[in-house]
Length: 320
Image (cartoon, rainbow, N blue to C red; front, top):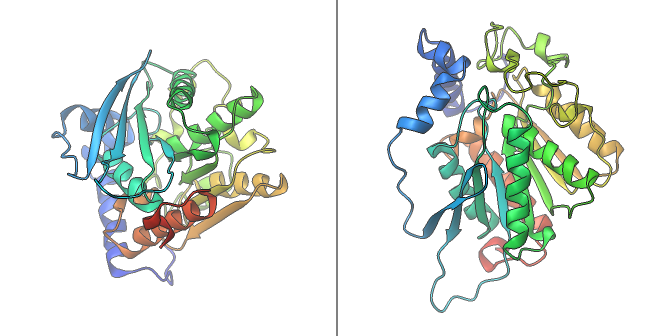
């Protein structure tokens, strides 16, 4: 970790906890191999939906998805909102779990009332590429049937979900499908060939993936039998003309730092409005801390500002 990084005491504690969780014997091995992600989704307690929200499970052809919406308040005049398609992380091995129900609720808050659809897309090693991308496409097409204008759709994802979000928008553009109104990535995994300089430069100090080649970022179960240089697998190798406004967040200490920096550079070269924010001293998907420490709270406040810029019809609580 950068010695003079100006990070909060709670941020340092969160970094310590993350490092222990990924490197503690047995627990760390299970997490790095993707096994604990599957166990977490299968055995965690039922999520308690906040009283002001409604959660509905949707059956799609190859996967399930969860739609989280804000309940209507009698007598309240609300502006026109949109919907977030949230693609969860987990290295293409982990499934949907309560952390992403919490982040869905956070997206509703910071967007001023957008709905959130989160697919439990198929994962490796049982379902390698292109299963996850196919499920993401199916969810986007489902959203279009709900009556949302494409400009009212924001695609968001963290880690592998961030890479999947970029791959989805590449697919939409390449196949002349309606493009979303915005794109958000958090610590996006965009280079499954691990070719960025940050993979070696931060190998010794990344608190999540550093110090070992036995981690999810070096497993090939997702692209088994396919070409990892394919932009639909490693979006860093794609082109970005015609992309919607994009917010990309990443931690300074990540081995995946260049995965964000390189895509952000391509977006700028293509003339796409992009906000790239490298958070000093932060680790992989630190935003999952929600408001528990200042750096994560700042990241979500930045997401709030992004919605204000791209939302054509501001709900009253988003505009304030």
